[in-house]
Structures are given as C-alpha cells and as structure tokens.
Length: 210
Ligand code: TYD
Image 1 (spheres, rainbow, N blue to C red):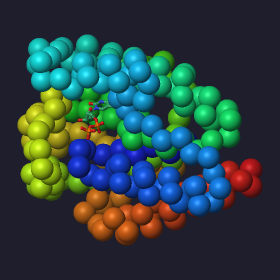
Image 2: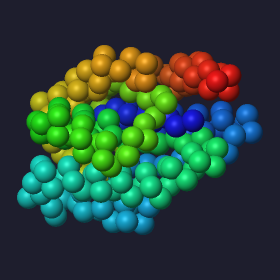
Image 3: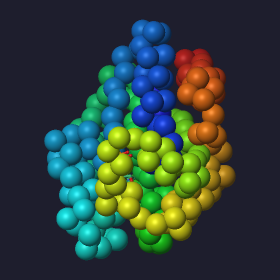
Image 4: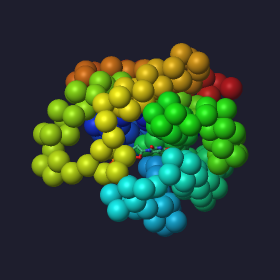
C-alpha cells in the first residue's frame, strides 16, 4: 500500500504520517516512510538547492525540474523496491505537491506538469492521498509558535501564492475523489488520526480481499 500526505506547510502532515506508521506497525506491517523532496542522497542535495534562500533567482521551470528529478530518483530507488517487497510506503508529499505549488501556485501549465509528474513517477501512484486542509493565517500562526520561525525559499512566498496552492489541492481532491481525501487540519491530532485510520482501513481491507 502506498499513501501520501499533502497540504500547505504546518498542516500537520508529518505528525499524521508518524501516527499512521505506528498504526501499521502494530498490525505487523513493514513500513517505509519517506519525504519529498529528499529521501535519497541525491534527493537531499536537490532539497538543499531548492530550499536555500541563496537561490532566490531560481526560475519557476528550474524549480519544477528539480522537484521532478528528486521524485524520479526516490521513486526508482526507494518507492518501487519497497512496494515490490510488499512493504507499506508512507510519504510526506508526492506529485500532488508539484501540481499544487508549481502548477496552481506558480502558474506553470497544468498539462505540462501532468506529463512531467507521469515521467517522474513512471505511473507509480498512491492508493490513497490525505490532503490536510489549512488556511494561510492558521499556517502562519503555527509557524510563529515554532521556536526558530525561519522560512525557507518556498515558505517565504506571499498569501496569494498559498491561497492558490490551497485551492489547487481542493481541486485535485474534486478531480480524484477515489484517491484524494480532504481533512480539516484544524481538528485535533487524534480526530484527524481517526479519520486517517478509518479511510486507510477501508482501503486496506479492499486490497487484502482483492
Ligand atoms: P517540506 O519538506 O514539506 O517542508 P518542511 O520540511 O520545511 O516543512 O517541503 C518543502 C517545500 O517544498 C514546501 O514549502 C513545499 C515545497 N514543494 C513544492 O513546491 N513542490 C513539490 O513538488 C514538493 C515535493 C514540495
């Protein structure tokens, strides 16, 4: 089973991913958890390039190709082998982040992004995607509560950008209701976890029976 977590920054993806990992492990599953961009040595180097404030002049298409390159490496080197071994793969962001941030956020053509996403993943798609939905103000409030308060190159974009990203995620969920589930990220950690588990159980049972 392959499950991705999506949403704007500070929506709580990482917390939910870790809780779902524990849930699968209690059921005796072998779980691989990954993040994007990153998850491989090459991907972590690409992540540094992408997030560094030193690359303020990075063009939008260079950004798109770098995210896609990191994804191609991660998919071939980690995701596909893990799925072949029968492991559960949980990932913090996957190609929907590119559709939402580079497509809806930056305004790059969605048809080109779709082609690039398919090329990078080779058609390895999540069985289930959780989109943790949070508005810009709530995201910024959570950021301010964090000690460092530091923003990376992408997080320093303006409100309009994040509103386009958020609406992009909601459009993705409308387009693919079988795969993508939107969850209100203002709920408690436990409430969100219960929704994630309920949905996962349903899909997990379907797969075990098929
Ligand atoms: P993330 O790892 O979620 O950031 P952090 O660990 O700082 O919370 O993602 C890094 C940033 O990259 C985030 O702002 C979203 C952005 N991003 C894209 O713009 N496109 C993509 O395809 C991916 C995977 C991430």
